[in-house]
Structures are given as C-alpha cells and as structure tokens.
Amino acid sequence: MIQKLIKREEARQHSMINMIASENLASKDVMRAMGSCLTNKYAEGYPGARYYAGNEITDLVEEYAIDLAKKLFLAEHANVQAHSGSQANQAAYMAVLKPNDTILAMSLDAGGHLTHGAKVSQSGQVYKVIHYGLDHNGIIDYAGIETLAKQHKPKMIVAGGSAYPLIIDFERISKAAKAVGAYFMVDMAHFAGLVAAELYPNPMQWADIVTSTTHKTLRGPRGGLILCKESLAKAIDKAVFPGVQGGPFMNVIAAKAVCFEEAMQPGFKIYMQNVLNNTVYLCKGLQDAGIKMISGGTESHLFLVDLTDTAKSGAQVQDELEKNFRVVVNKNKIFGDKRTATETSGIRVGLAFITNNKKVDKNALDELRDIFAHVILGKPEPKIKVLRKIFK
Image 1 (cartoon, rainbow, N blue to C red):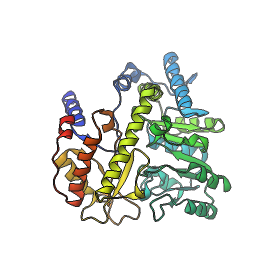
Image 2 (cartoon, rainbow, N blue to C red):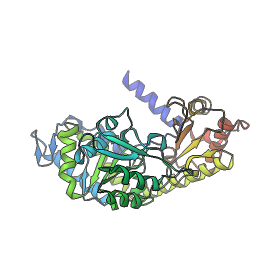
Image 3 (tube, rainbow, N blue to C red):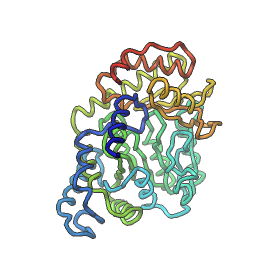
Image 4 (cartoon, one colour):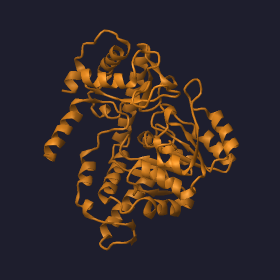
C-alpha cells in the first residue's frame, strides 16, 4: 500500500507546478543516502565519543559532513546532527540562554518563523520575546531594532525568516547586538543555498550562531544545521545532544554531506542563479500586471504577494490556483494582517523547485504571470500551452 502511495506522490510532484518556497527536489544521490543501511545505526554522542559501539564508519561519515559544512559556509564549527531547523533553533537558544532571557526577533507576520518566539512555539513560552517588524516600505525596520535593543537589552537578537524576500543587512543588526552585549543569531534556513552559491551575504561574517535547514534552497534532505564560532562549539554540541535530542539520524547526516558536496559543484551556482533570475522575472511580471508585492519586490528565491487591495484571501487564491491550474503555493500572513492564519492576506511564492526543470523559461513564467493575474485580479483566463507540455 505504501509503495503505491509513494508512486502517487511522485507523480503528483512531477505534474504539479510546485511554488512552495520551503520545498525543493532532492537529488537521487541524496535520497539514496537517506535510504541506506546507515538508518540502522545508533550513534548517540559525537565522533570519537559515542555511547554505542560499532561507530568507526559513522564517525567518518559525520566528520566528513562537518568538514564540508565548515568549508561551504566558512564556519569555525558545524553541528550536523539537528533533526530539523526548528530543533536547530531550539538548541541554539539553549546553548547560550536561560529561561526567561530576552530575545529580539522578527515577528511571524513580518516574515519571521514560529521558532522566533511565536506564542504557540516553545521559544515563545520559554523565553521573553520582543518582536520587530517592517517599515512602511515593507523593509526590515532596522532603526526599530536598534531602539528596541537599547530599550530591552536582549540576550540575543535573531535575524532571518521564512517569508522575507530582500537581502538582510546582517552587519547593521550585528552592530545593534554588540552595542547591548547580545548574541547575534541568523536563521538562514530559506536562503542557505543562495549563500552557498555566493549570491547572498554569508551571515557567518557577522553572526555568533547561524542555523539552517538543508532541504530548502540547499536541495538536500530534511534536516537541520548549526554553524558557530569555535568559542561556542561545546555549548552548541551539548545543547543538541543530550540537550534537545537523542541519537542522530546517520542516514540523514550522510545525505547532508551529499548535498554539501553538490552545493560545491559549479552547476549548483548556475542553478541558484537561475532560481534568482526566474524569481525576479516573475515577480516583476506580476507587478507589471497590477499585483502588489510586500517589500516592493524580491532579491531572493521567494516573494510575498499582498492581497489586501483585492477581493480574495490567501486561502482562496491558494485553493483556486491548485484546483484550476495545478499551481501549488501557500497562503501566508503579511505584516499587520487583519485576517486569520487560516485565511491570510498574502500568498508566498517560491521558484526553487520548478527551476530544477530546465524547460522552465520566460515563456513558462509569462504563462504563470497570466494565471496569477487571472486568479487574483480576475483578468481573462489565459491559454496555457508551454506549462502543459512541461508539467504533463
């Protein structure tokens, strides 16, 4: 039964036009590593200091993944055991903070993540979290960060998010953190692939701790990653294990190593440049068609559509795109959103997944523009030719 369902899901993934910004298409080598015999091995602890015998080979696997991560992101230390980006963030907080310490982070509706102190998240329940947002142009309110930092004296300032399309000024936030003696952490889960391809500033230059996932723009397995300065290495490792999780998934760590290898190849930079080009092109096309964007556009792999001046909610647009055109996006709250999280006044659109298909060109993107304009603005229903050939 499960094999039949997997085949159905595989068919769905290759027939739908997947524009969910947090999803991507892992390579066959990544998936082979995930499905390998390494899944059978318990390896609690770290290389050379395991709590189980028989880890001679798994030690080599993990050491190799660590070395690649450090090289790829110019980090002094890397922990590749985190099961997810959320657990990476949880461990990072635990490593340097105590319960009720103050964190300054981007709010969820401004583009932040649940683990950046949302009340429903453990981070919002264990720590005192002050949120910053966007200015009237939809750009991070850097002056507001500086003011809030001086006012609340946080122990940590967090940058990065899940729905912010512009390049973040890490240097300025770092200075705000240093001015009040706070740790500076960057969650680069969404733009890590762009960083690896040198198309986005590397936050390791300014941050004390950098967390990430490996399955979004990095095109790897579902998992987490923590990078930090050597001075924080022991605290980070202790927070991951035994702090927030037990045995690492050695099959996933092997797959992370494969994705790091792939990210070091010349073809990966070409892929990420294509992602960036496609995203900017489609975003501009939608703006020219009369569709409003949060932050005025994009400098990354995603953009956020503002539906407040239209008659439709994010949930309606999401459902209509999938039902009528096989285009998959996700509804998303926007800064100051008056709608609920199940309705929303925005949709988030990403192009990392579909850019893996080299047949996606400007003609295909023009058809996508016309589809969005039809669903959002009620413009005439477009004739779809190119997309139907690509996504059969």
